[in-house]
Length: 320
Length: 247
Image (cartoon, rainbow over the protein chains, first blue to last red):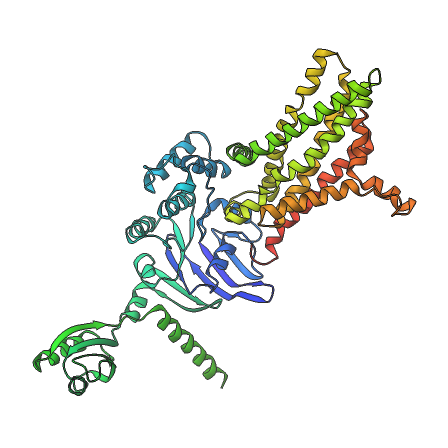
């Protein structure tokens, strides 16, 4: 449905996207993950036909983004990052306008606009001015305009940014409901977001793809529990030496409370779950107070650092 | 259909914003004052003289100044506001041709300008009640004003497409239009040959013939070219997103 081949986009001397290739098959939900300024929005704008790539090719629904941009724009729905809507238009009128611009008229227009107001949870605000709506509602109006014409491909730039937790769950449910029928490409810089909605993830950094994986294996990699945080009420030195002896623990890193009544340390290990149990048992057996045992999930920053260093190391070994 | 939807949106957005009402009110107040003073002047000093030459022509020439100051305020928001809000990104990812978008904005502003001008038709109707007057030269004069309005709009839309700031767009448009007016004023500063060229470029010299009630193909061609040229530039600006930096 989406195929990107060696795509690059330069803005003057800035190379926003460099040599990116990936494909998305029909009905798949794919996440574009990367820090701010990594080129996510640029890739999406190229795919929407907003501007053509500097080099390389991209095809969406079988249409070339540069040469068949007008036909292509009929087939995609796009939610830009900053939800940009006309503040002095009413919600229903705005959706009608969007339908008319896309050439949807008469009965079908009425039917689609009503369906969007229902599906996107806008029943309470159809006659409010968009400028007076909360961020969450505006996001939903943005989503409604993207889904209005039942597009084959949906491109969502940071769909849950700035929403409260309940709204985030609602938007995710809405996106997941499209699985199988609509191809969805969404971007985010929040890690759990991807694992919850996407089947596959493309991670980009400074305009290049650094990893491509399924959400499950990414989650496994992240929650591998190779670091465990332990907080104990007891003498730091003794606790360290006891916990170091626990089978499976490679080494102990004391992070806080040397000499105090309570200490905090990180146990590095290669396995996950069994170590946590053994650590807890060891603390309890020595009669110390166990306050907390928790696996330290890898943050997005850690993941990036790892992926980027892995890649740089790979380059070096290739060149030597 | 796409054009109609865009056109309707533009017209409606004029009528829901206070700017249109303020600009029209100021325009009509100033025009009304010009009408009043020009009429008093004619009645006091020009009695028995040709009313076309000594009253209507003066009034039309005065109206163009009021138009020059008010139309840039109507055109300044057309692209600058959409760029500032970011809605231009939405529109340009819709199946809309750049030309359709420009035409919708241009046409909507032309309609608003026509409504504004129509308000001043009250003056000839009022005078006609007191004393019947020859209408045809006056209609030609109004045609000239409308051409002038369309040219102002074409120039204003172009400047608006260059910037995100409405104030910058408005001020720059007034500056450019004023330059096209005063281009041929200073005979002493230019050589006679250059002056002859400048007169052909000056928008207001072309308007003079219309104000006299004369339709000259040369003047019509000038305005059509002026409008076409600035619309062409605007299209190139819209297109530039394809090879330039962000937005």
